[in-house]
Amino acid sequence: MAYTYDDTNIFARILRGEIPNKTVLETDHTLAFHDIAPSAPVHVLVIPKGPYVSFDHFASAASDAEIVDFHRTAASVCTKMGVSLDTGQGFRAITNAGENGVQEVPHYHLHILGGRPMGRMVAK
Ligand code: AMP
Image (cartoon, rainbow, N blue to C red):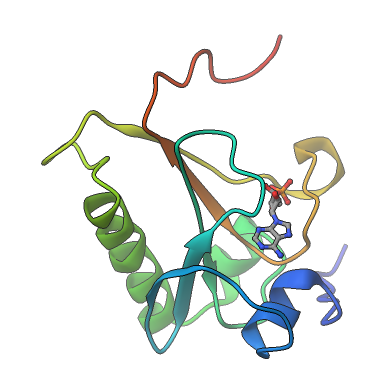
């Protein structure tokens, strides 16, 4: 199945400036912003600015510059939010993909969650 990007999704609208976001960090290739319905004291979403549906789409199709910038920005978010192992108590990074991954927004995003113990990784 081919990756099909729907540019009406809410994160595409955020990237076009059509709806607001609470930005944590922004670079040429990446935007990080607070989740609108946080599941933990720290809940930041990191997204590429390019039209990628999911982690596997991004990791297989994005340029090296986009992939490097995305991960460096995610690391900077961890530091800025005080959850990096360098200075804080850790975090969980999650990405959901597709139907079985229970992905709501079809634009690749990495959730960075912390500020409390995050519990078990997944329900059995
Ligand atoms: P997922 O289920 O992995 O696709 O996660 C989508 C996430 O996007 C959820 O945690 C939502 O709370 C979050 N979300 C949806 N709309 C917005 C928005 N306008 N601004 C920030 N976060 C949002």
